[in-house]
Length: 121
Image 1 (cartoon, rainbow, N blue to C red):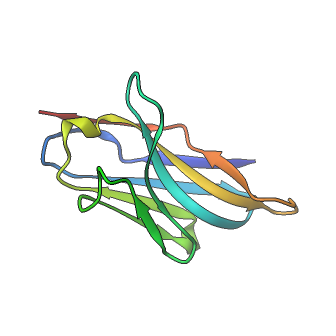
Image 2: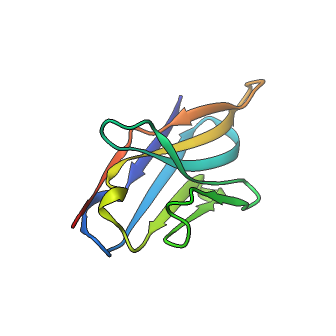
Image 3: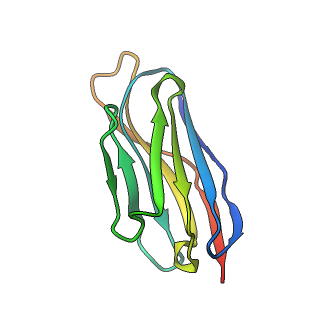
């Protein structure tokens, strides 16, 4: 059993900041890439940012320079620092982890339950 538990969402004014956290727990042997995705009403889920176990990062063009992804491998936790937030950043943000369970032969994608981020203008 694996759980990805997100926290840190909420309501913020445009120009403000929020920090999301996602902790993975369970019978985890190894975690490869971790990331954040978001889905606004009526839209498809889209990539926000990813980070590999070695610290290589990738960002959507729409958040470059404003968002920073980081992780603590010892805590199986990934973070998303969001600055200069815009109303168009409003969405449900989902944590994702490509991880290997103890005794399993393959890595598999797991998702958190999502956390709402609302940016008011």
